[in-house]
Length: 156
Length: 156
Length: 81
Length: 81
Image (cartoon, rainbow over all chains, first blue to last red; front, side, top):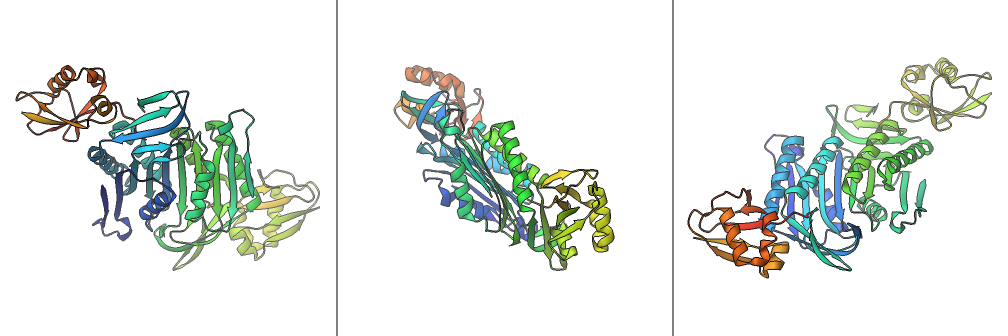
């Protein structure tokens, strides 16, 4: 678990870096997501983009009943922190939360949430999208689809 | 006020169009935003992108104390509905909420929220971004900046 | 003929009112209405040139012809979002 | 020398365990470890070729050399998000 709220030493009071990176077994419910948005948004931020990944009922032509996520938690959090570093460097987006839930989730439950708050919306969109795309490509997390006709660890 | 939850006649039960378009004087608070996300997300949706525009403390080198938004409400809702139509056509994104608050708001308060829920995240990101970009370009809404040294209706 | 005017944002504050009725000759265009308003309300003359125009809640060009009972709105530079 | 193995996802279920210790000759590479694991656990042999590899929580290439006490993890195709 890597949480930090560090005052950046730039002299810009409202530009303090705020970062929450976490692999968790707790539900990513409404309260959690709103708290993240509140924590990320500082008075200098005008645009907040939130991505929520949710278990959906169909994949590869199957009716999905549930998903089970596994992670290599220490490395996953380290890779997520690396993504946050990149996002800060490329878009100046230093107010970022990336949480991925592991364990079993049913349809409609949230498996991943990324929140990025920036002064302007373009950076928030770009940074949020890069973060989730890169998370899917590089962070050691796995997904098992549980359908009526069986279970399978699947890619993507 | 243009709210509709229409069952699309495609025979795909989970693809029902869900649309909320609204100019409102009510706060776009945590409860409102979460309710929108819930309302937009159907069991076929795997990716939800939420954009929140928030009053920030600085613009054009000024310290902003508050913003006051005005709208031509009937035309604004009509233009927002047109954007939702375009988004449905281009990305198949039929689960969309676009709300803009008018009246006076202080730093940290939300002036606009766009929620798009899609089966896959790429469409949700593209549709959400197009919706807010186009809203800013075409929807008759205006903004007055209230700073220490005066008030001014500003563009953008 | 008469058309209905609604004012928003800077125009509303400058005009000091939210709506108005404009008496125009039959066949008048949006451009004619703009000229007449600028003449009648000199305070608006500075704002009107930068405004887009909507008639009955749809954007129109300056040469659009007005009809009795139209709702005419001058749209200052937008600031939504 | 000994390296520590941790299993996740399909590998964990197939191996029936979460961790293991691998005895390897000094100077062994990731590729050597992979071959030895496939020989020892035939059930894993099908999965290992499609796995990426991390040593001490960083992705490495197959020719990376292992050191006593390393944490070696085979990373099946990812499914996060």
